[in-house]
Amino acid sequence: METRTPTATATESETETETEHGGWRGGVVAGAVAGIAMGVVFSILAPPALEVAIPSLYGLSGGVAGWVVHVSHGAVLGVAFVALANALDVTEARRSTLLGAGYGVVLWIALAAFLMPAWLAAVGSPATPPLPNLDTLSLAAHVLYGAVLGALVPSLRSL
Image (cartoon, rainbow, N blue to C red; front, side):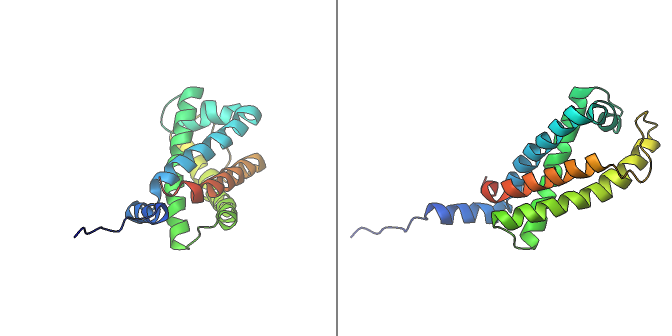
């Protein structure tokens, strides 16, 4: 007599995979894509942010270095967003997008308004903004980052 082992459906497999790694891979990808979207805004409206300020955080210079650092930050912050969304049990796209937009505001306050100016001053960057740096373009770009991140995470969690 033949014995068959039940097979998992695609949905069960995706859930098992997501449970195993918490969706962090999707956070990396979503964060990088959201970082690119934000970087495009800065490239068009505030090129010195990517060409001078961001790379000088690490003693680097130039647009390529700025892009690499910026997208890397976006990817890491994407993982942190997935942890937050998991903790709050936010899986639906609309709620995730709204959470992401709020996350962008929090990032702007903590990182762009306070941490980045202090860090740039500490390393002697020529692009040191005032502390706090309450730039509204930066706020809008961080909200865009968060909204794109939040919109993408639900569909990328199973990576």
